[in-house]
Length: 421
Image (cartoon, rainbow, N blue to C red; front, side, top):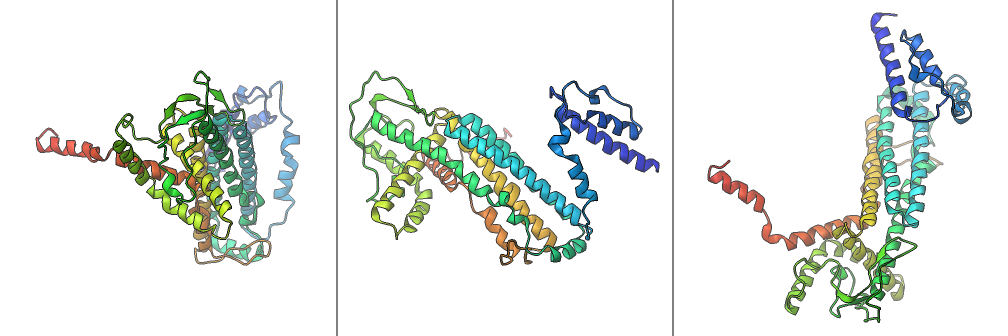
């Protein structure tokens, strides 16, 4: 072994042992392979270290990992192509990580349904990071020898990573995470309509998203106990405000309380214009339901208004709805992890390896699709309502602060003109 080869080997051993130590040093139980790490160090000419000695309590590594199966995968299989083993290994690794992603999502779903929004958000963020990692993981396949892989590709026709059950269910499982949030918003809206006295002129700024026939009417004034204390929904954990005083629209423009009726109308008009960015998409969604009965269309439009209204309040008043806001932001993270982290890099992988105009291997007897068709996987949002609400809030604030537009840059230019910069 040359000096260069020995130094390279030592570097690999140090990377392995140091990574293991940084990952598991705080565990109270060992993994059962610590002694093997010291054996590896000795074989590379390094001294043993106490941190890699066997611990009093250890996990049953043989039972958990089945190393004999791993070894048989390498030595027991016959690989007729140069890139076959590497190709399989990367895909099997992806399946393992996908399993963990689904586990995190399932726990997040349960926590959200129980109203534990911050815990659910933490689990979703973990899933988002794994999806980002998965994108980099599969890009390892770009290091394959193209000629050797293309020879393998011919013989694996009919199979594809796209056919993975775990991968195909990513979007479905992530979309299901939106349901607890909308349920909480619907519950909050229903109870607040019942337990709060609303001004007779109440109109939500998202109402232009609906047709005039389906706009929700201002609720009648219920009889409430003015001394009622706040309650929490057992299902959603959302604080329910009870008050005998009129409530302003959740998105009323700050500073407009107590102004004349003309001022109220102006504020609502501005708010209406702020929702114009989402009106078109809402109308399109309504148009797609033209074949449904009128009552069904009305119900769908009402449900959509509740979602948009609630989400806009959550985004506009994050301190008042901290749990729901953290959960919504976690959904944004996991959406980016799936679309930009995994699906986009999957498209890049396919384009870099076989070319964007080529066709994949297909799966389950399906007709091969051109690689360009993969663009739809990362161009289709998981949570379109979140994007629409962000746009609406941005448009609303732009209108509110129009008189401050460019103020900072104008001041900088003014200072520059007077020689202060």
